[in-house]
Image (cartoon, rainbow, N blue to C red; front, side):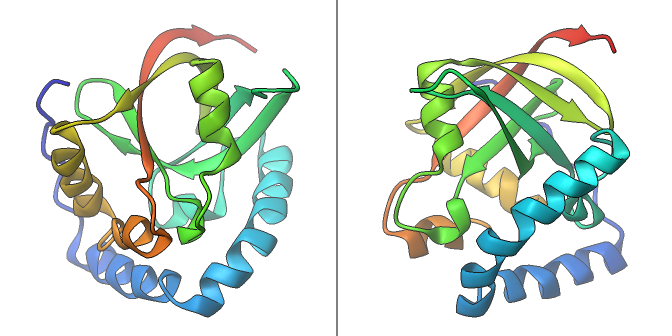
Length: 174
């Protein structure tokens, strides 16, 4: 994986808000409630705005990942935080709210690496590749420059979270 370009420095107020909110998201109450409450709210908001807005995008860059089910073959949408790598690609982490199991979308990408993303209402075809080996620590540092203590989800889950690099293949119209 190519070196990562540094993210632009966040406004001090934005950085402060992210530090406070990220601390809240590491609590047991949040980790219990968020997986139950956030996905239906995010789906509703995406439907209403045509994928142009997600709740999570208030705090961090977010996208809607559309994968093909590993077993069913059906389209599955998931709202995820992403971090740009500085070369036109997106990095996503399968943290699954620190749950002990990998999120379903990671199995889907492993089975079918071609997927779609929607970013601010614009749709793209992407190809996913797993980030592993020595690149993982460097990528986690990059992710945490955007979302403080993000790797705590991996540590608390007791498993190695899957990291993916999403490379743009083409823009979709409509």
